[in-house]
Every structure is written in C-alpha cells, then in structure tokens.
Image (cartoon, rainbow, N blue to C red; front, side):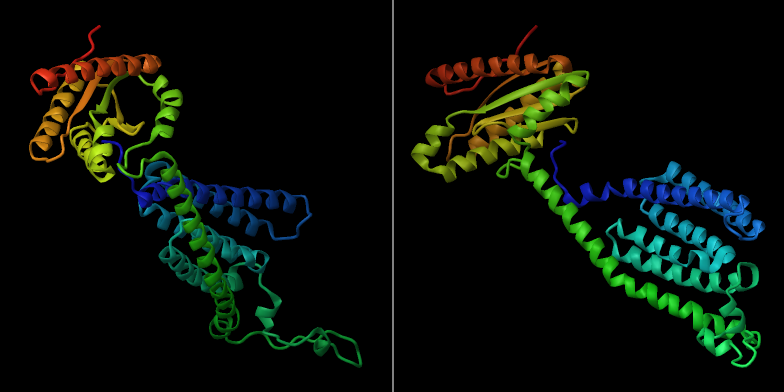
Length: 384
C-alpha cells in the first residue's frame, strides 16, 4: 500500500534534480567560454586564438558527455560521481590552456558537490580537484598562457626588478626546475586555499540537508495521521480535488469503526486507541499497493485505489473483514467495522466516494439490526 513514510528516501529523490543542475552549470560555463571566444575574435580579449578554440572544443565535449550521462542514468547513485569527475575534467581543460585567467573556476566542482548533501562526495570532489590543480599548473606552463611569475619564479615586488640607475626592468633567470618548483609554489598553495573552503562547504551542505529534512518532516506531519500513520483528512481533500479527478478508474472503500464512542466512554480512550489500531492494521495488511488509505475522522477510513475492478475491491473487503473478525475473536474489546465500496471514473471521484459512504451507512444499520438478533455483521456492496 502506498502509505509508507521514509524521509531519507524522499530526500534522496532530489539527486536527479541536483544532477540536472550540475549539467546546467556546465552548460552555462560552456556558453561563457563561447562568449569569450567571440570577444577574443573581436580583439576585445588578446588571448591566442588556438588556446581559446582548444578550450571551447574541450568544454563542448565534456558537456556532451555530461548530457549523455544525465539522459541515460539521471537517477543512478554513481551519476553524481561521474558528473563531478567530468566537471573537474572540464575545469582542467580550461585551466591547462587559459591558466591564471580562470584560476577561480577550480572551486566550482566542490561547490556543486555541496548540493548533494553528502560529505563523502565533497571529499571526493576535493581529491580529484587537487589532481586537477597539479595538471593545470604543469600543462599551463608548457601549453597554456604561461604566467610570467611561473617562468622566472619571482617573488619580489616590481621595484626590486628595476635598475635604479637606468630604470630598465630586469628579469631573473628562467625557471630551471619547473617540475619541482611549480607544483610546490603554485599547485600546493592553490590546493591549500581550496582545502580551507571545505569546512564551510560541508557546513552549508549539512544545513541544506537539515533544512530539506525539516521541510520533508513538516510536509509529512501536515498530511499524516500521527496515530495510524495513514494519510490524514487534509491530504484526502487535496487528492480528491487535485489528483483523482485526473486519473482513470478508481475504487473506493469507506470503513467506519462500530461503537468507538461507546468504547471510549465506557472503557477509556486507551481501549478506543486499541480498537483504531486493530482496524488500521487490518486495512493496511490487505490493501493493494495501488491504493492510498486515509483516516478522515476519528472512526472513519477511506481507501482509494487506481485501476481496480469491482472484483478487486470486493476481494480486499472480504480479506479485511475476515482479519477484523479474527482480531475480534481474540480480543476482550469488541472489534468491528462497517464498510461500503464503489467503483467509477476518477473525474467522478466525489460521487464514487459518496456512493461508498452511503453504502457504508446501510451496512452500519444492518450491523446494529443483525447484532440485536444474531450478533453478526453483514457486508453490503453498492451495485450499479
């Protein structure tokens, strides 16, 4: 029966949305790169054309790969890892050719990982970003826009490179050991700066997760009967007006507990709660997965199923009634419930519910009449 409540599962379904957002971020970044290529062609930027073209082609390929991943496996648990890996590759390609122009872009994959509310994924993103930083530094030195500081390895202010007599600008010798100095003086500091962002990103991720969980819990509380864990009257009214009129065939069972007020008055509310729990258990035990069960009043329950025939509904009624009778036989508290059922089109849901309700009241009248004579409960069904 479709009445189970699982907060974690409801939150996890948002991963598909997060995966699409990660792809969207990559698409936006690709558009921005394309825009910079146009500006470069117009001589507004002065980057070597082939570097811009290489960057754009790499970005387009990475974005296409991400698009295929989202299209084919958007709900898979591994998808987020694949998407973030491709995004880091995207950043690596940009950094290798454009180097210091896009140094801030390295943090984007880590920021994207925060939306998944998963600290393990944030650590994974940081790890592959660290690898990316080392690749960017070395590839940028040999193939990209080489930073002058990387070339001459200067750590002095401008005045220290100017001859005080001639005023000429003096450069030191060319970096003799780039494979030793660049990772140490460029990649490592960047990785440390990125690492400094991890606690804040994890905190934000946890806040997002807590807020999402709190919102889900509030939503569940707003639509769930706390005692029975069935949907409450608010959810019933919402679906009756907004959902069921748009479905095809529906079947409705209307259950009403017999004598609940008398049990509450004479035996106490604990006994009344026991009676409610016993009937709820019977209803949920034999209701099909295509059904939703609602507690719409203190002693009233409605079960609505989609695509069910009259025979399906009748079979469930017999099984539920049999379960109630067995519980009654083993109980010191009398347990019984009257039921009516009907089938019809979703667009006529209120009429179908009314028909089942009317049938239930006839059943209840028969119950009390038969109880006086025989102590039995009959089942009355609606016929069209």
